[in-house]
Image 1 (tube, helix red, strand yellow):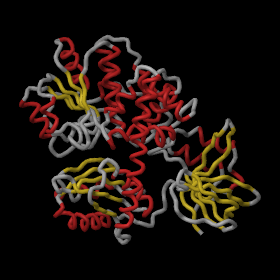
Image 2 (image 1 turned 90 degrees about the horizontal axis):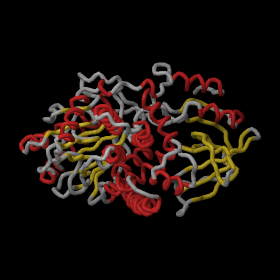
Image 3 (image 1 turned 120 degrees about the horizontal axis):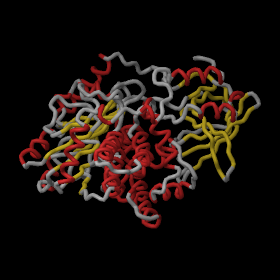
Image 4 (image 1 turned 45 degrees about the vertical axis):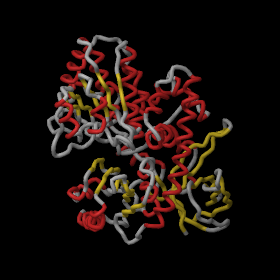
Length: 526
């Protein structure tokens, strides 16, 4: 393990951007670099001029909610009508599915955002009912593409857009930029980047190249935003400015909770709030959804952990009547506990198993699951997160094959977390060190916040915190230096004066206008 100094850490962080550099908005590719973007734009403009009926179809996660919102806001700003719907996770399933076609048969043009690339059967029904279909999506392509007037997806092999890892809201933003130009409107497209930055972070896009540029600009726009929903969020968090961590750990879960627990339209309605009073009222509804989500998630996590076979390389756990809106989060929590890729499944109404998976460290969960795709009825996702369904009779074979697929790819359970840069002594941790780290923000997927190890640390004090005592705060001591630390979601007991090794990230804690250094503990071991 490397012994670190601030200079060495800065060299490591600088090296992350060697290929892309530090881009800004002037480096953004033109919308026409997307295959079919101009074709899609021209068809939408034609529909507007001919007063055709247009329906927008979104998705129930944060990316889909933001994508839907920015298209709606743009149409509203240019004074054009636009109907919309987001399929309900429980009644309709994901995206443009055959179940929602009866609700759109009277429309001339359907536009998807953050979904549609796998909607083969639904696209055939659209053709049957003479509905022109424009798909904007960012997910991996299936073997058979849907039938559509235009498909805008950067993962198409003949697409010239230079970045493959962008989210649905970024493509939706490019679409309104293209519409703005073709319609000769004067909408400030840049002002929409505040919302787009939420989607980039929530959908775990790598915070490099244009994603970093859009998030950096977007955070500045968010912090001066006149949107009532954003003002309401800041008031609720008691913050004058928002950063990437606020979005990842505070805002995104609340927006996501509507689609997980009830219906994503609540989140869209909140973001479209016309004044602060309306926004505050709608935010309370979302927070209640999120509280429900937390309680159900904890219960299912406890049950799932009891069912884990610790010998498995890839954990697969199934249960009865587990809430399908939270099993993705449960899979992430079980993966963190056992340090292994995890898939959580629950029985659906038709008796099949439906679930979500989250990877761990370097394992490409999409790749190893895709090797057994013939056992699945539905499958989609990316490197670190998947959704799937399969007949119950295929479960045992699926479990066996996953273990073999994992080993065939040469993954190693004992791999050291690549986000850990090395060993760091307390004497280097000061506000100058934090200022250096800030230069490489925002941290997130693809530009992870650095983790450090410090050995031979004394626990000088430990106390529980949180409503149910589920978190712990510490005072750590080494070489004459004391630092405060926090460990979330733990029932483990720690003892004063014990000597431990800690793995952690570093942040600033602001409380009552006083700024202190705080270690965000990931693991404590003897």
